[in-house]
Image (cartoon, rainbow, N blue to C red; front, top):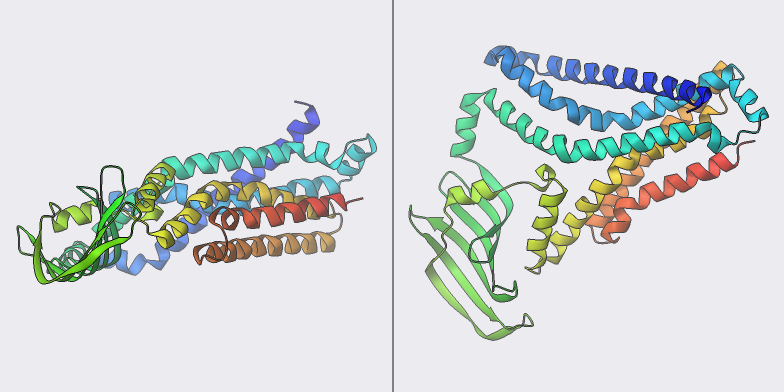
Length: 365
């Protein structure tokens, strides 16, 4: 590595670490003071509070690393430009890519690190945070366990059954708006059961207003559906089993989410599968945000020579960063709404702003 490369990389690294540490400090302080009254009333132990914020750290890092990369890029290249060091490098025949390739490599490494942190730390940290936060108020936890309403519950149960429950009440162990998809060993649908309500009597599930549809190998209904006002079904899952199997997609890593999508895809739940595929592909696209942000910061950093121009360049780059997040949110929403393919909706914002950054870099003198 050449001396100039080390010089640029050192400036980038120091600024990035400084920004991340500052964001970590601000996040913790703001969250702590916003909840200070509740913490004092509940007399939360220091050890419990420390566990909560230690679990919070990887989440903060993943969320703030893109803006830290932007500030580090603008600051590092801006300083070089103000001191005419970039002009000296360009006069020796260095291209924009040669000058900034260490920054691009740095952004790529940060993207890989964010991806690994997401898979190894963030999703488990979210669960730990939720568990620790529930301990802040033991009375609230007991009340939640006694009377919790869970909506849109999807569970892949035993005997190749897939359950879709519109509403699940933990207070009286009842379910409403139930759809059960029965599959065979090859994961082909053999029956579809729709029930208005189900209740647990301590040993068995009793279903009410039940319609049963038998299906052939092509998924078409065979014969007339069977209806019963009340029916006791041989379902081994207890209410606690439903709760234990519940895991929200935002708390799953990529492998868990892929397995869950595979199970749902065998049930024919196309809209849910489509939405979850958007989440899955977003797990791959999101870590590259830091790299895209660095590309966006490069053309504006090259224009910083005077204070006024520097402030305007920083302002424009921050606005573009904000527009990137807005565009990404819109693309994700369009994907979940079925208007865009899942893969395209997850990557479209990256493609648009990467292309825009390359255009702006190409326009540099």
